[in-house]
Length: 379
Image (cartoon, rainbow, N blue to C red; front, side, top):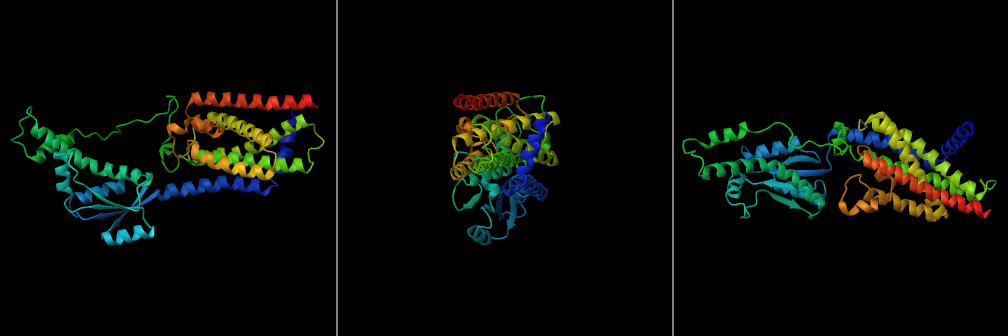
C-alpha cells in the first residue's frame, strides 16, 4: 500500500510539472465560473426580436408571456420591423417574430377552421435549421393559450349538449379559467424513482456541465497518455519490462483521471448539480478507471505521438457530438456506448447504466490484461 501511494505521488508530481495538464485542470473552474455567470445573468442561447404591432391587445400578452417564460432565448422588443430585420442581417439577433395588428382576428379564424392557413405570426429568418425550429416551439407555447381559449369557446358554443345562449363569452371563459390548474402538467423523474433530481439539474443552461466536465477528464487522460508516449521514446521507462510498462501506463492515466476527478467533484457540488455524495464518489471513481483504461488501450494501439494527438482531438470532438451532453438522439445511441463519458453521464440517476459502467470497466480491464499477458510471454 505504501508503494502504491509512492507511485501515485510521483506520477501526480510529474503531471503537475506538465503545462498541458495544468491547462486541462484550469478548464474546470473556468467552465464552472462561466456556467455560474450564465445562469446568474439568465442569458439564453438565442436572441429573438419581437415586433408587436398589436399594442394594447393580445400582442402585449403574448410578448409578456415570452419574456416571463423564456428558457433558452433572450427576447428583445423592437418598435419597427425594419430595425429588427437590419439587426437580423447583421447577425445581432437570430430570428424576428412579428405579431400582426389583427392577431386576435387571425386566432379566431384559425380556431374556426384549423385546416386553413391563416398565418398567426410572421417569422423572418436567415435560413431554416434546428435553431429556428427549437425557438419556434417557445413561440407556439406563448400563442397556444389564446388558441386554446378560442377552441374551447367554439366547441361549447357549437355543441348541442349545452345551451349557452344566455351567457356572454366572458362568462363562458370564466368556466375555462376556473378549471385552469396552476400545477405542473408533467413531473420529470429519473428511471430510478428513489433518486430525485435537483432543481439545478433541470436547468437547460447548467445540465450540460457534467458532460462537458467528463470531456475534460478524458482530455486529461489523453494528455497523460501523450506524456507517457514521449517519456517512453526518451527512455524514461527503459528499465521496466514491456509488460510492466503496460501497468505503468495505466497507472499514469489513472492518476491523471483521479486528480482531475477531484476538481470535477468540487465543480459539480459548487454548481448544485450533484446527487448524493456517496454516489458521486462511486460514479466518478468508476469513470476515472474507465477513462484511464480507454486512454491506455488507445496509447497501445497508437504509439506515434503526432498521430495520437490527431486521434485524441478527433475523439474529443466525437464525444461532444455523440455522448448525451447537449442532445441525445436514438440514432447515436450505439456509437456513444464506445465512450466512457456515456456511462458516467447516464449513471448519475440510472442504476442500469451504473451496472453498464462496471461491465464496461470489466471488458476494458480484460483487454488490458490480455495485452499484459501477451507481452509477458514474449519476454
